[in-house]
Length: 332
Ligand SMILES: *[C@@H]1O[C@H](CO)[C@@H](O)[C@H](O)[C@H]1NC(C)=O
Ligand SMILES: *[C@@H]1O[C@H](CO)[C@@H](O)[C@H](O)[C@H]1NC(C)=O
Image (cartoon, rainbow, N blue to C red; front, top):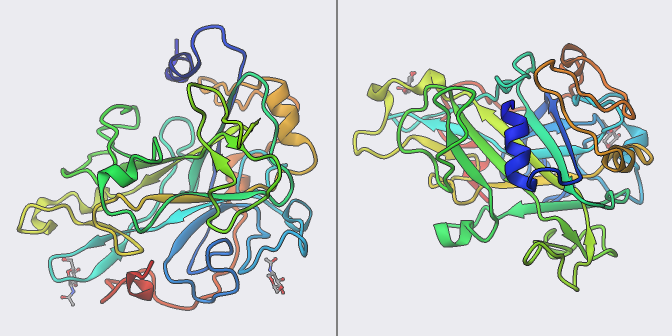
């Protein structure tokens, strides 16, 4: 049994009818725009890292643009997936108070060729209904300051990687020790939809978590579980002589959160046609051992090709030096 079979067995129980797409999406863009929470605002309050289709833009009004048609490339391996997935960006805070941006890197479990970005999963157990064009959602909240708040969204977690294989010690706040293999941040979205609204004012209340494995009557439609992992390359910052003298940990989200409880993620659905529904109905399973995507109903591309899809930054500002302050001063 490889690690992924093990993972799925734990998640769904042996023999359950299940789909599990697992694939790499390389870095598309690092920029201060956020079409979901701050549409039209350039620059947006905090910095993001984005993967997926190249129709990502400052505003993404579904009535104006269908991203599954407007995009001409995707940084994901499945070439019918023009969705966008994004998170805040991690920074290292030096003893002298300056900030250095932390890069993402390819998941060592099969996707180390990726030019950063995320490992994306779509999971199901039993029949699910794929998202509709224009669907979007946010999970987590940058304003959360306590573990109790963070736990409202199960599995928005940090893993201190000893190696790419580490899958234990999940926690809701930043690791407090150096992590030899970097830090993995997981973002898992709710799986029940109200069946009507493509979005909601808080970008969250049109979706909900199952209760005792069933979708609540308010959100009766079971959708695929979108789940992504971002590998942050904190390895260049593992010298304890660079860490704060008071024993605290040095990493901070781009919105100024040094606890990690504000971890959040964004999603805009953009699969072309019925591709996602077909893959879920076919109960596609990834095949990590041979690094094959193993979903014949979907078209795919090599990671080296996916690496070539990127877009130009809109906001011209230094993101690579030792910065006096977080871009946007770390505002939420
Ligand atoms: C973003 O939107 C602007 C204004 O609508 C448009 O001119 C531009 O082509 C769009 N960029 C992409 C990458 O779609
Ligand atoms: C601040 O600290 C970093 C890391 O030690 C160093 O590279 C940088 O040059 C320092 N900047 C200033 C202005 O002292």
